[in-house]
Length: 209
Image 1: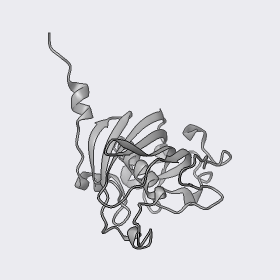
Image 2 (image 1 turned 120 degrees about the vertical axis):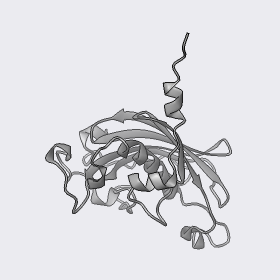
Image 3 (image 1 turned 90 degrees about the vertical axis):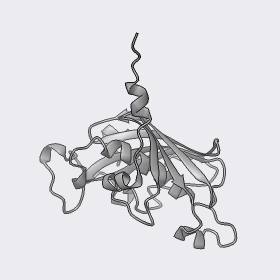
Image 4 (image 1 turned 90 degrees about the horizontal axis):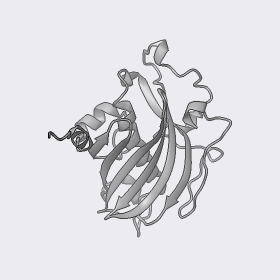
């Protein structure tokens, strides 16, 4: 009897840094995943981030005790999810993926230069323009961070896109919540060691809830 190995082959798919850069608009110093080692389309992705002392945030965070900022770990979760989502979008060159909410953020251990992050993201809800994902980041098999993130696709400024692929309402998405942008204190706050809800229920598109 023949055995179906299509699922295994899909999960083992690798995406190198050049392919990641074709999917994500992020660039140094804000491209926070180095490669993808597992992909299950619309379901799950596993990415790797190698933490280096050469990264600029370690100059000030902190000079005598370098720690990777927690917000960047959450950003890495979102970028891994972005690869999973944008790989399914045919006109992704005209799109940006922005945060619409972050829930249940917990930091379990510090991340320091020399660590390798294993970032596993699982899809909880998938819509045509929005996704809700659960991210778990581990170092040497130990959990460093957990977070649930909600993201939505919006038109990239200056890009030409078809009306059928545009979100019905983009003005409800906080502009400051874009992946790779600073969030305003009123919309988001991540505190090390605590679980926080950072979504503004009045601003979230229904598809992302």
